[in-house]
Image 1 (cartoon, one colour):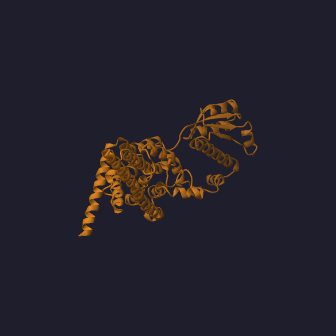
Image 2 (cartoon, rainbow, N blue to C red; image 1 turned 90 degrees about the vertical axis):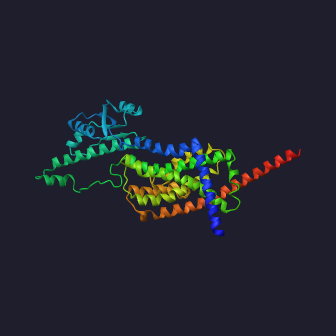
Image 3 (tube, helix red, strand yellow; image 1 turned 90 degrees about the horizontal axis):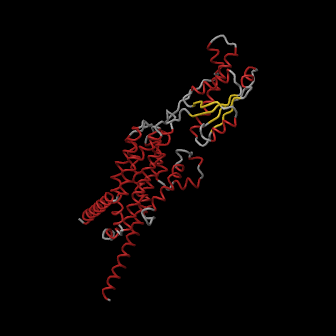
Length: 411
């Protein structure tokens, strides 16, 4: 009977906290923006920006000092490729560099005067490629196009000078070792399919932390923690407070997470080959981890605006520290890998990419899955402790205020 009464009381307290937090979320425009509008619209904006996936028709200026049929063939083939567009012909390198410095062009093809002469003498000819390295995608398009065209022209010249009798002999002479280029996990080779999955997982963490931080900052400014004092009369009350708040955030973000990881990639035809059952099972600890992490962070900021400055500052570093995009995990120094272990996004991004992009199953992400549960448990305990401290401060403040009122009445 005693256990049943305690259970009923615990459920009642959790429901009270859940309902109170849900009302505060609905009333606070800033929290609504981070909980609803940003997860709905931000991934759409990112996906539209990167929807083209690859860069096409990169402008290139040509300096042709050879003025030969072979150099014109090289220029025509580069211009015919989908990645490069020959913008103009410059009279010398200085003029071409001027166009490059003004960003009118993104690359320079320089063909020396002895280009065709060297080929006819059976000597190695050279084509110089100058690239704007400020944009890696443009550099890739300019350089790889020149490389592909020179290989094709070299194979044709080798075939023509080989003196073979059959077409098969010519093919073998031009390409003794045949290879097949098959891109896996990102068939289009697109930047969107490469970067968007990590961004989606990071949006879940960042918006949750920002929304919880704003809500906690408002509670601290309005001293709403005094409403929780009756529930926090014993240590178990902290579990009820944290559990009730977490239930509110979980209900909202269960819908937002489904939108982010299931709907958005399919709207823009990004790679999405993971089973939804595996995704749901993996994202459960990730979502709880982000919620408790946000609750811990929210108790470290005094004013509601501070959490925005903090999370905006660490967004880009967290993308690099994940080790799944932009920079490989094996190349990250040990100290920074240890720092990355503090954030749920590190293991959330790795696991989500392996499931959704690579077609993995839960067996392939068990280390990340277990770590997320451990992190969620650790942040839950820390959240209970910091909320207990907040309630203690609220209780002390209420006692001081009561003492001041009683003293004023005596006077």
